[in-house]
Length: 346
Image 1 (cartoon, rainbow, N blue to C red):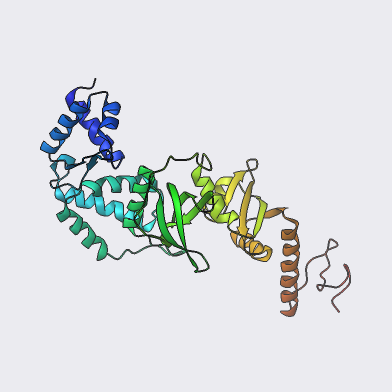
Image 2: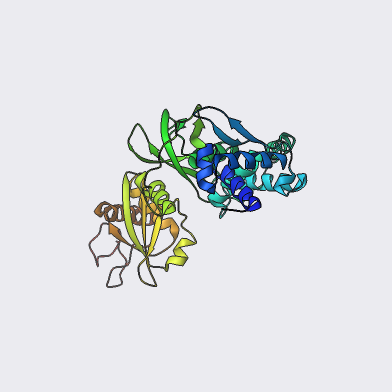
């Protein structure tokens, strides 16, 4: 049996890891009686932690919003600084922050006193970030992120309105599993109840429509590596044209230019790698690959090779109209596109 002080810390950790516990569940987790659980809850309240109790068969204990901050071992300014930093990172998709920041923010806001929550909200509402150039960041409401994090944590069904890439709106009911963040976007991996399949949703297109619930038993995830699963979904599965090309550069060099949302990479020896990606058409795929600036070899599909030929011929024709010499033949002579190899341009 745990000593009292260690047991109180364990009890507090359980409250922060799960929204609501029954007395019997807490007693089982701590290896004590239900009476001891009640005494420990009273001790937490004496220390300043607001633990709410709901009586009845379906009742239980829940950690409420804090009236005092000292139990967090942070003063007011430190708590505000941490909350603002986490909200800023979560809201702007900063590289490397990841899901742990959202979980930390969910825990902190759960016990943050009202006076400090108002300070944090004011700072975020009246702060304008200055970001580097590049594709626009998909702005995500931190309140939506923390709400999704809570529902993932507590295994509660989520209801929301979703706006597709084409601008159409639909109502969804899902079993949320995990949040995945890229450099500039957040995604929710969830089991779509109506479609009976796993889906990936952009969080900036989600508008929660409470009430949520009931609780569910989490399913086996669609992949062990959820980051790779989401990367493949947003860069390949979402498009009509799928391709695989061999880039004649090392994997690390290609990864510097190709984000997870643009394609998946795998090593092909030390001096090459395979890029798998998607696009709206073979021609658009060729343009995308050419813009990378790497030498490449088409692996599949055959339509992509045909698209390379079409674009090559268009470029040759454009050069000819501009008075540039035609492509070099194996014998070294220039020719106008469409003329037999070896013949002059007139």
